[in-house]
View 1: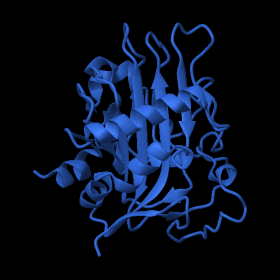
View 2 (view 1 turned 120 degrees about the vertical axis):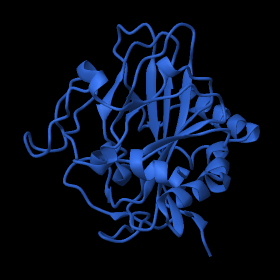
View 3 (view 1 turned 90 degrees about the vertical axis):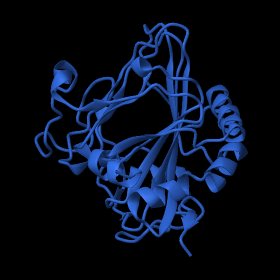
View 4 (view 1 turned 180 degrees about the vertical axis):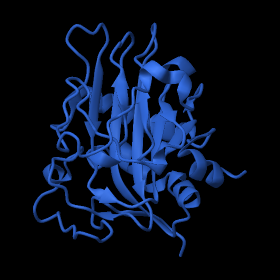
Amino acid sequence: MSLKDDFARDGAIVLRGVVSPHELSLLTTGIDEVVRHPSPRAKIASTPDDPGFFIEDFSTWRDHPEFAEFVMHTKLSKIAAELTGSTTIRMYHDHVLVKEPGTRQRTPWHQDQPYYDVEGQQNVSFWIPVDSVAQKDCLELIAGTHRGPWLMPRSFLDHQAKWFPEGSLTEMPDFENHRADYPIVSWDLEPGDVIAFHMLTVHGAPGVSGTNRRRVFSLRVLGDDMVYAPRDWVTSPDMRAVMSAEEDQRVAGEQLRGDWFPQLWSQA
């Protein structure tokens, strides 16, 4: 089977050696700068008693020239088109995730789609580590969950349903305590390897063991059928807070356009 077939079946695949050493250098420089100088959108996702430290930041690619160079030139955009069958690929947003050595905080099982203000099926999230990642420390994904249903998103630290009214979506199954019942996939990764997954694929991540550090740049891109879908709740990232009123020209039901959502690849 092809990678496209695997992606359609599982909603998650691994791509080996698709990020060049130069691109890894760009991402490493940008990630380290984000850690030193987080944006106003950054979140500390670990508790004060955690021996490690987990920080996330969002939509920083225009603030860091290294990220901008990567986003505009990476061949991952063409790969996204091949995986989704799209004729064009557009930027949605980026997400920096860093877990320092010894971090215990787990990223709970969740889908990304409920947090976003886009709808459609042709999308890819790329999880791009710049450090070696052992399988026991790797992002984990549950194959096939991209076919739905939407599952109740809950805040990571206090587990509150802040986006949808209680009972309005299917409750998240207890994946963690019944791991053997589900097709959970993860891999040993070296710098240059990438995980590609659908925005509805359920995923989570453990802490990091020993002296390991896990620095990741995640790139989220949109294919042909992805359109703007205004939400009644605050999305993550909240693009309304990222863009100025003049920049925010999004129209419900239409593809995202403008400087924040450039076209990264086209078949033409």
